[in-house]
Length: 209
Image 1 (tube, helix red, strand yellow):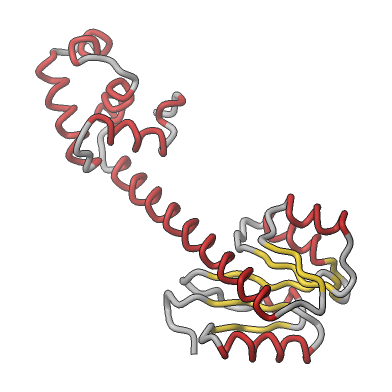
Image 2: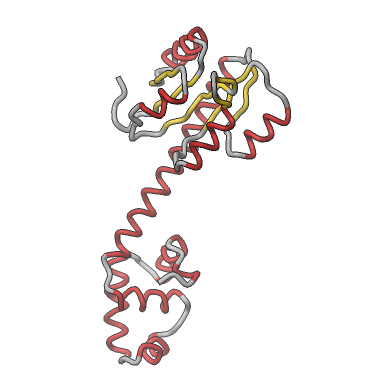
């Protein structure tokens, strides 16, 4: 049974023997997995909250794995993909890797090669999820500020001094200091350098207010 936060490997292959073989391999290294015969079954399934990756056969009935990779990307479903195929060629491999695939394995492949690719894919997804979580938290802090505080933050991270900001906003330097203090507290920034890094992540340095 898959627990929340545990890594999950999704497998799409129309060959039942291949699905069973990969699932058995994953069980042997204590990795949770869910297998599907078609991409449609996968799309109807409930995704987990933990890191995940997709082991995808290139040639499936009615759909090409590379086309499905693009469909997932267009739908905003970001999951690291490992392609497996019995009919691989160099152009196909290049196209898959350029589109972000983690690995392209030609059957028959070594169990260890698949496991190595899966661990790499899960690590990639962990990093992505962590970055998205941190960005969501920063956005939440940013949205907790008033419009004037956001304006002050934008000017602070652009390198302006308090008196310059006061002149720009037509207010007093004391008022700017108060707003600046609120910005640092609400953004939970320990220093100006940290605030600048936060702003860069939020793209405030590129004119976004």
